[in-house]
Image 1: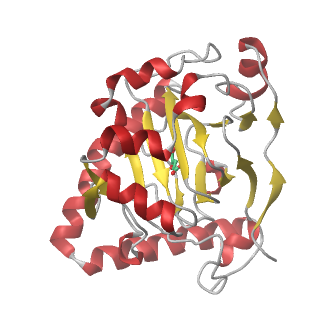
Image 2 (image 1 turned 45 degrees about the vertical axis):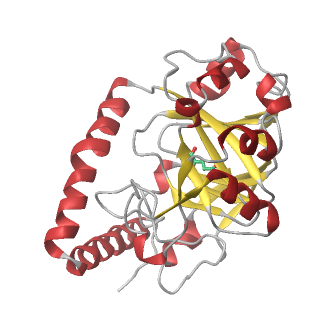
Length: 292
Ligand SMILES: O=C(O)CCC(=O)C(=O)O
């Protein structure tokens, strides 16, 4: 059996507060909303050229998918470069280089005036919008956000494929303990190493310019840029317990992971990998599939 994310994420053209709360937010079901921010100035204005014009000399942190770093949250970018050079690079040819959780608003505070926070959710964290920029082919590997908030991801330039899995599949997606990451590559799944993948069910969509995807708290996401892309996300808090768990994960648990990696080196990685395998095997046993 192959990993299944053939289901299309539900899509609506527009939505009211009541419809969103009842049908998606309270039950924590993903939805793509075509016209939540499609009329915003950001959707008309934000482009590679626009940012290059304003931020060309800014030194930015650039992320990639180094396979040796899959078992952790990368808190700092492994490379830096001039923003203008970065834009030239992604416009020239496909690349895996991405600007992840880029706080473009720190450098251009007026950009927050380019969109309004939509009136469909409560407890929106208005001080925490982030930009995401990538070249065609770049991938934000399978992870879930460690702060556990609801995420509203909007594309203002380009298009990307987004695959989501419910947090119910933490074990079968081989979540590394102490992190919200997995080594699973859902586009080239290794079923010998990760047999549990054959028993997860995800869903997907192509997020086009102007569209917004609601990713509920703790949802796993894998994102592949189908062209040069510029996106933005804002977040809202989930339940008190989910939020407290997120704060503990983002502060205490992830710090333990960082310290243990320094203290124990590669044996910490082996310990986490073995534990992830054990949890997946147990989950497989529970659905009647016996592993050694
Ligand atoms: O669109 C992207 O590049 C990544 C988005 C993402 O991973 C997130 O919002 O958590």
